[in-house]
Structures are given as C-alpha cells and as structure tokens.
Image (tube, one colour):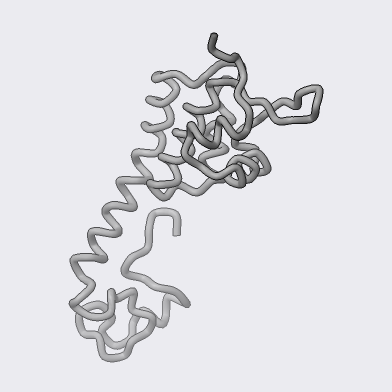
Length: 148
C-alpha cells in the first residue's frame, strides 16, 4: 500500500536533499506541510515534483523569491502537472535567454580586456574612449541587462 503522505525523512531521501533544505524551503514559503497528531511534518506525495521544480529553477540561477512568486500563482490544491511546468518554464525562458546572452558576451570578450564593464578606465579605446563612461555614473556599463 502506498502512503498518502510522506515523512520529512522520506521526502529528503526521495528528493535527494538534506532535511535542512526542506526546513529552509518551508520557511521561505516554497513548500508546505501539515503537522500530525504527534507534531511531525507530513507532506503530500506531490511535494516531490514541487521540490524537483524548485531545484531545477535554482540550478538555472533563478532566485528563490522569483520561484516562489511563480509557484504562488499555481493551484495549491493538487500536485503540479506538466501543464503547470509548461507555464513555469515558459515564464523563465526569457530570463534564461537574457542570462545566456550576457554570459556568452562576457565569455567572448573576457580576454580582450578585463571583461570590460569599464568602470571609468581612462585608457580603454575599445569600450571607454576618453573615459566617457564616468559621466554615466557608477557601475559597469558594457554588460548591463534589461533590468539594470
């Protein structure tokens, strides 16, 4: 017989994460548990798919706050489906494409100078002739993303 709910140890083992990670995810509002009569955490079986999605998001560099914001818009009364994943992955795709473009540009130009964000370097004729970036204020200029 398959149990309807899993203990925290079972979830940790099946998801391949330490128990402390589950506590952290719960504290951040990414996952939820209920308490048994003995005050032990119990998780629905669908939590394993949710944890897998959280981990994929983390591995691709998506901040936990953004992962949570996206998950909060999905139904909480059932396990996540492939349709839910299609929505999440579609929303994350543009951010990942932007990050890939930025990292590719950085990789391709890294040995040309110092990765050249040109923080007011006076003698960079390629990226910052005449120290023109100084007039734009602090911070790197060449590798800004759309959100900067």
